[in-house]
Image 1 (cartoon, rainbow, N blue to C red):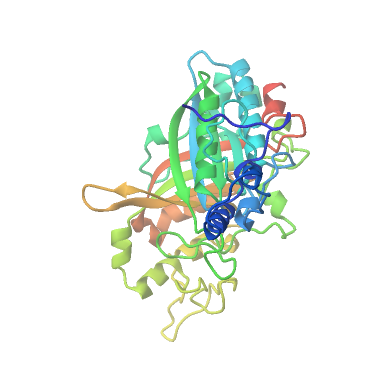
Image 2: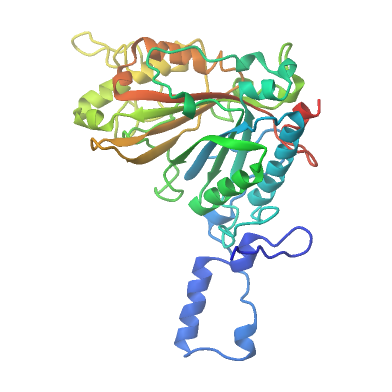
Length: 420
């Protein structure tokens, strides 16, 4: 029998108020055991609400200038999924779908059951920092007769010599990023949105990702990838004065940028397979030369700490560059790319062991920028010409999506486009 989501008033009971936490349940069981069991009215009274852990209580607002999941701290669990509109579905069906998706995302991000027939997967959890982010692929505008509203920034990415792209796991009319610090909460959101799609759209591809869990280190740290490298040290920071200019479309978009993209951003998504068997055969010193940073703490090979700027001119006693000319960190540093910057917010993935014994594992690369032609493209072109890391990775899928700004109160995501 399918579980039925309890309700409390018009807005619905929160997941955490429904069942409390696992810790609370465990404590209750110990107390009952200590007294040999409880009977009568004491046993029938509901247990008092118990606070969730910090991880469970975190929440990301659905409404705002920008969608959640862009500047939100990296999540422990994620799902990326692309949909194609069904044959015959157009603008009307797309608008109805975005209304359903937005209603479900708004409820789940608040820690409440999803609208409609909730599956019950996350009933005993809090919001757990759930963020759901929606974007539109280039083909969406053809399917909805909105080509006049398609941003120029959605022009196809150029081909790169290192690409080994699978068309069936690339692109898509619609794209959703789901992130949470609880794996069940993330899966609940994925399952809900898939069901919400109904006959309007079908899944084109779906990928699962993860990061280190909050609290797994003594203090917050930049995450490591599956190569063991600290990954994301030079990310732009919201505290920097030009952060919004680099990452988000202005509230008053410039000429040539449609108004519906105000407060939005562009997401480049790449599935990057890591050839871990080959990488792990390299001695530590050679791994560090490939990256240009120490593996232990992420500091540049030229010295300092993780946040120390690279000294690109420093040489050793023999006159050789300490950070090699083809080191990954040298090629990607903004100072060497005319200030080109993107907000990297990736997830690791592992999809099993192949018949040859090699892991199908790597990075679900997601980066955000106000214009991919000024962010991702120039940096990737330089990497394509001579990155020492390129022989240890393989780009297997790709997508580019226009992610509108956050929905205002009473709006659904994409309303300013679909009702323009």
